[in-house]
Image (cartoon, rainbow over the protein chains, first blue to last red):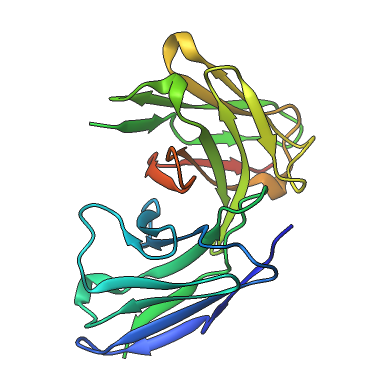
Amino acid sequence: DIQLTQSPSFLSASVGDRVTITCRASQGISSYLAWYQQKPGKAPKLLIYAASTLQSGVPSRFSGSGSGTEFTLTISSLQPEDFATYYCQQLNSYPFTFGPGTKVDIK
Amino acid sequence: EVQLVQSGAEVKKPGESLKISCKGSGYSFTSYWIGWVRQMPGKGLEWMGIIYPGDSDTRYSPSFQGQVTISADKSISTAYLQWSSLKASDTAMYYCARQSGLQKDFDYWGQGTLVTVSS
């Protein structure tokens, strides 16, 4: 199985901050990576697919980059509704594993 | 509008069987893979497996192979996740999700089904 690691696992930030989350894969996955946002008690929501393509309806302050084994999710200016847990997922080979998550909390 | 509607919360005893469901609407149910994701209390997301309702082709994570069965009834646009003998460690929220066509990410999610297994 392809293993994903995320860093940091926890992040404390303020409204307006620029936030970057990193996802690393144990082997190359080309651009087969997605990012999800999950708020407490809710189902995950797709933010970005194909490493850098914004899902329809997702605010442009979210962006993704990377290929191969290293990927980043950036929130350019953190908004109150962005406090949540973020997961990456590799879609290169079965099983389509998720990263362990990064919780973004209010400073 | 694409929707995935899951069956309601379940409380079961260890050793009992269970089948939960996920009904799709607003799209061609037979043309997209449907997956299942486990989230144990306070933990992250775990990819369990997926099924293609068009021909019932199924793929499982090795972690869940033999532990659960994924199936689908295309006549009623419904996917299922079932257990033959539940354990306390199966207590979790279970989500179904539609896998998008090309990139294989999960673009639509059900609301989740909470399964509690306790004696």
